Length: 185
Image 1 (cartoon, rainbow, N blue to C red):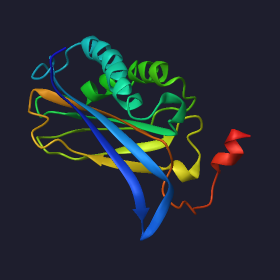
Image 2: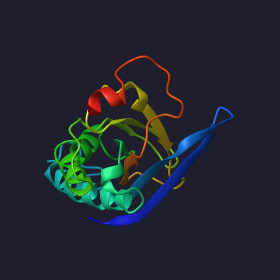
Image 3: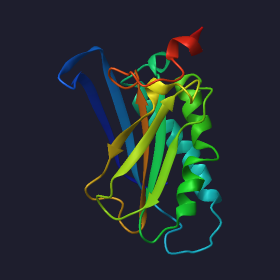
Image 4: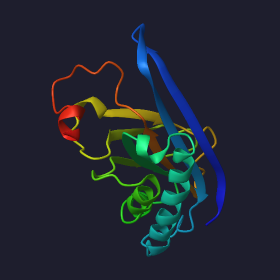
């Protein structure tokens, strides 16, 4: 696997809508820009990308827990942007079959599916990484997104893979639905 760049973006939400956020919510995005060995090869076997997904899940989760220890992670999400010479199936191979298993092994669990998004794009294409509570995807306060883009990626023969982890839900949640405290009982 030929990784060109890895980024770790840390966001601390201290105020929202003019009101302090207590406790401060931290969101970390771990981002890898990688050469796509299947770019320009329509219909090729995606098995190599499934293997990449296993390794990238581990690498990116390790970046996340360097900022937020695994036991403090509330929610997570994953996304992939495939360069123009790739296929949307490349994104599916990267982030679905094995990526999540690697993430869960590193962060110490997570019963809920990891919300995901995928798209094809050119350098600077943004992606909204959907977020959900790690142990129950129906917790209303944790439905959220984090927007990510890399100015010079993906190039046509690359892909960008993103893992986001947070230590809280949305600031000041008031929308009705399943509550975190009801799930934790």
